[in-house]
Amino acid sequence: MNANSKILLMPDDFYNRKLLTQVHPDNWINPVPAKCYNIVVIGAGTAGLVTAAAAASLGAKVALVEKNLMGGDCLNVGCIPSKTLARAARICSDIRQAANYGVRGNIKLENFEVDFEYVMERVRSIRAQVATHDSAERFSELGVDIFFGKAIFLDQETVSVGSSILRFKKAVIATGSHPRHQKIPGMDEKYYLTNETVFNLTKLPPRLMVIGGGPLGCELAQAFQRFGSKVTIVQKTPLFLPREERDAAQLLSDSFAKDEIQIRLNSVVTGFSTNGEEKIIQINNQNETQTIHVDAIITGIGRVPNIEDLNLEAANIKYNEKGITVNDFLQTSNPNVYAAGDVCSEYQYTHVADATARIVVQNALFLGRKRFSDLIIPWCTYTDPEIAHIGIYVRDARALGLPIKSYTIPMHQVDRAVADGEEQGFVKIHVREGTDKILGATIVARHAGEMINEVSLAMVAGLGLRDIEKVIHSYPTQAEGIKKAADAYNRTKLTPLFGKLSRFWLSLTRKTHF
Image (tube, rainbow, N blue to C red):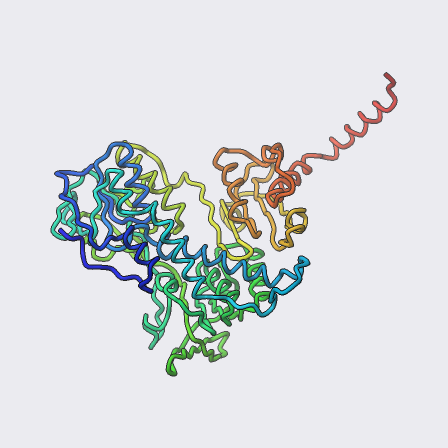
């Protein structure tokens, strides 16, 4: 049977058509189902793809069901397009700063033009290039049966996809999440963009409002401002990224101010109207109302799990507004069904989806007892500077009654950051007081997402700051900030008694002649 009707991406150009031929071919014919599958995976985003590939490589008979595009959010409307966009925006910022590095000549450092149409074309071309790894053809060659269509549970061991009936020993729900819709009277979905639609743009909005100061809102606000939009960002809390430590969030606010983004903190959108193509928005800040006129709106106010229309009740699978209910082994209330990724996790990151998929494969197919709670999860917001974190925050330690000590190295004390002109930020590592055991870390730096991995490795391997201090770091690198934090810890071990003994010993050696 033919999978379903043709999907059209906007704009309908060469790169989007190339993408579709890989992640949802319009001539795809669903295979004849096997009598029974070792595992049926619902959803072909990161969690689903990792589950299917790993299970197939281990010899399982696997069916993978996707109703939209293989690759999910990460490939199509998340990590890949957004980071491609951020890279172009960072180049724009670097050009504006070029005079500070001695660049002269005919470069229009202040008034250069951004070819936004080409920027977005490049985003689509990169997405189509990366799609090879997530393609239906590749997974079919891995031995996975690919079914395009909507999965519906018929009972505790059966799923239907159109007229196909898939019976399973185990199943995995990996359907991901979608943007939470803005609830403002008169402002329905046609008036604003989300991460699912913003990459359809081909023209730069002269005036843009971004509602929401979480990771997505912050990344897009900064990128569009650097392309030339006049951006206003509205955030209901006193600082952006409310999960992060206040000094990290403050540095991001300072960076936004430097980029000349209009910042509205402690503010909520209360009204909306239009005048032709113009959007008119009322915001309230501490009982004061302001009217802002813009050409486009992007919202990033959270995510909602994709659980609708699965008929979960038929499979005895419990859920709530936060998603599929799972235990620490990622098992649902139906012991033969597991869940992975955004649909069951508060940590909605691609690398977490990958990690949960690996847990599911071991637990579902091999009687494993891998626990989600054992994961040590880093994350990063890809603004400029980036903000990366792992482990606990100071507030968490206080709530748990854990005595901690923090070692903070400002990036202006790191030679490479000074040489690069990237001195904004810090490395902050928390250890249990009296030990060198790392409990958490926050890094604010232009390359924080790369730097946090060293701390992540140390925590997973059970290594402390004393071990990091022993590691020879290439010089000069910005990761030396981590080494400096370890050095700061070691200096605390030089107690007054040790100092007295050291001075006494050295005084004796001065009097000794060989």
